[in-house]
Image (cartoon, rainbow, N blue to C red):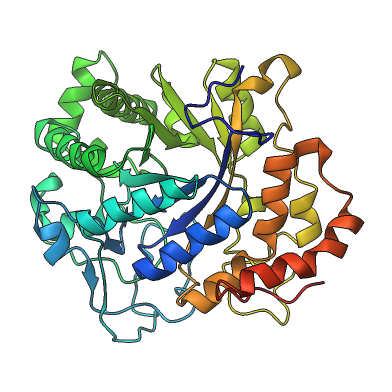
Length: 403
């Protein structure tokens, strides 16, 4: 019996999703709807919208209006890869970077998003919103400096990487988070609300008297890093309880396991995903498998002769061979709700580039998720692929050339 809260259907996995990052590069609502139509064609049933990040805030908040007027715009964008960039670089903006000096802006009104939810529902698709917290808060703090401990005015991030600015997790930050999630629940009908939880640096907390006192009140050592993992776990628990009061379940990246995940959450496994899935299911926590293999912002195989991407990625054949149950014991397989592809958009600046990166790999993942072990052989899949690609072309989607 699946623990998934999505409407039941005949798919092998009940959660079959794709994530769109509309923060790094904004996507018009017409293109978001085009993705919904494509997902329906492929029998996928979840569109995960990543609506906030360091580089832009895309959800209209009526309670915190400067998120729309200020945090949704950055003055420029880094060209190519940031200088000296690594996935764990806490200073991704430096004097060696080159920028395009073009304003990048955009957000979705609450009415637009309500209409999207209704449109997607008519196609059998649930829209799962994500507001990333307590990390990835640079844009929000650019609008409201008081969301940090020092009150310093920031600029919306113009480069990629992990920024040190995080949400304060005492009363002002908690109130902000509840206000935003309350508005999210008013707009979206998804049983799952994603709060991110990933890549949250702990340096600001460890340096802030307020956070250190919180840790001491938890009978933890304020000079020990693990204490701040537990502080994030406490924050996650507060958000899970708030969402539960709205009849929703918290979904978060697998960092919410660090420090101990609260009851009643779902984990999206992405780092060492088999280990994360093992940790989650062992604790009785449902999981959605989202490994780097399914990061479709990575090149389709080696980077040679491909557009600039974050790095080399999975081939079509590797995606089709994906096993979402890897690392999960047979007796806990019912805790694997499904799987999801990610389309982070640092290196996906246009809709045309999005379709190129997503397809046909998304067709392969759709078959893995819907048909499971009963899917065609890879050879038969390839034979049928041209006709399926023609169906996408009728929607205006032109993907990567077929192998």
